[in-house]
Image (cartoon, rainbow, N blue to C red):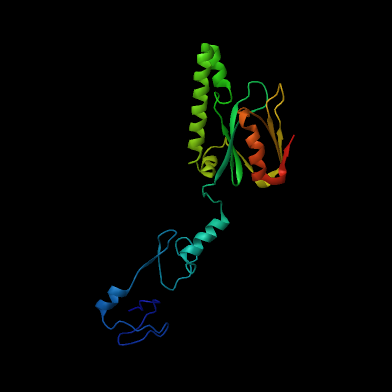
Length: 229
């Protein structure tokens, strides 16, 4: 027979456990009702009440489940959803550049594939296809598309998205040395240059009507790393 608290074997007739001092059940029926099986929270293996480590996976059984969770979070990457702070519609520099979306969270910049018709192109194509009326239709389509993209972005877990899509560029704030915002000129759209500890990234802002707002918001996110030219 075994103590229901610590698992130490005892002989029939003994009243108290000689290891933990627990008062022992005096009949087999009571003993069977009290004895509980222990299972590892990590792998499900059964273990003895006196075991210090799981025989199946080696997990420390003396650490509480809450402390185990903290240890896992500290030791590996967290997939807790980051807070989205800002979205900028942009394009890579060059001829016929691919469109991009820069998502600023509270930890990183996530650069994802953008939409071709965002950034004035929808309105311009509408003008070509149908004059003034076509331009108005294209402008409304673009406005609705931007609202749809930004609404959907609010529910994205960017860490999980980036881990499943190798084409998504992640720029951690801690690696940014300089973030340059160049103002719009007569011929040129406003641009973004991001200098990190290892690379430099250059983008042209396609939704330039929000440039003034970007100049106010980005310094609140990145602090004195931001330079406005």
